[in-house]
Length: 155
Image 1: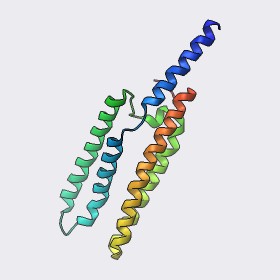
Image 2: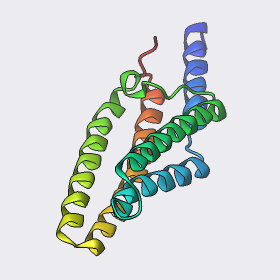
Image 3: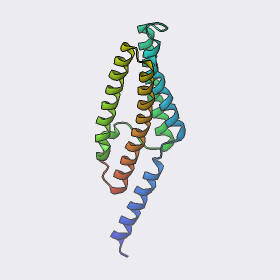
Image 4: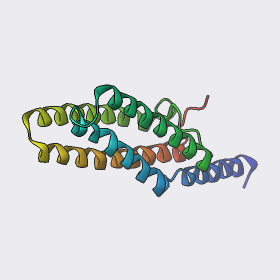
């Protein structure tokens, strides 16, 4: 075996090792699901139990907690996830799916709550949280695939 093929084999082993490190830990998925459930559950409490200002402040705090969780995930895996959609081509379509699911769930939940269909609104929240966890797993699998194939764009 010549040096070139040995170097390519070593590179492929390193890519595979990095891709294996990108498994999302259970605590990250559980914390993200809980944060999303609380965030989507806030409209159920407004305006009767929580004022609009308190709801907005709570939303901001939850978003900051999610950013903190993302940083903790980066420290745990040793891989930068920030701007991941820019670096990994297979993950780019997932970003649009995530935006569509979030917009549809917020709009659907608002319409259902205004019409008094609380049970259906709760169903929308549960389905949305499950979909967002599934999207996280899908996105992570796409990133791992890009790394194994050498399609990640380095900066």
